[in-house]
Image (cartoon, rainbow, N blue to C red; front, side, top):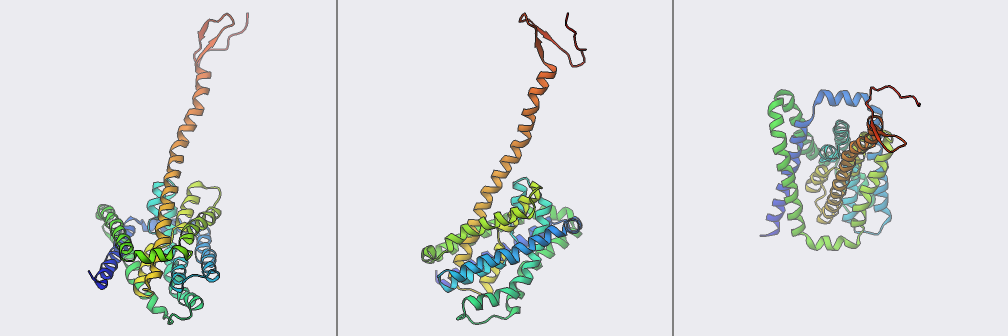
Length: 327
């Protein structure tokens, strides 16, 4: 199988993932509730936007500028830095038993931010770090994101508004198709470009693959310290970047294989890190009610159980009995 055929298969799986995932996420969104949730938490959403499109990108792009790494990998870092809105954020938040409504709201906000930040910010960032790459027009970055990322999400939302019962039935199968397509995309891409993954080993891509989710976890935790569910939702939506947005950009705008290698490494490891973290949070959330129940049990036994007299005999005491006086 020649390279052009393999690349066509990779592109097909990538686009299938982005479209199916967008439709599925849109069919899960309760538009009215999400808008109301955003209005109630707009300060929280703005702080999340600030961290995802100013603070975290500055750290990632700054790292790429300071480290001596191949030019194409720097392009990949710029893509990861500016493409926010984790596609699996609502799913991972539900898995962690955290605030799924908050995660969905933040996901929609971050996707809207990505549609603005990537076309406006990515070309100048790449031009500053890698002057040898020809300049790219804003529209050349924007139209694929609008067509393949925004349109399926909007169509899914509209379909849910018009046919809510049907949307409920189709959302999960579409999500399974999206996850399967992503797994095939990653595996075929790794098999086709295995030598480049080895070449990226000493480039800082694997270090960034761990650093990006760790930074996202730290910064996301600072957004809301008191509310556990909202804090965990912010962590998940910040620590995982937009896999779909990155795939679209690497297909249509910056198709350099080594750039896509760095994007794939960072996003794949980020998903694994957050999956493990979500499972740990789920275990902690499951154990919390049990610990609360266990701590109240001894008190119940003391108030309703038996009492021992000085001679060693046991006398039962009902909850309603009066206190006995000493002889």
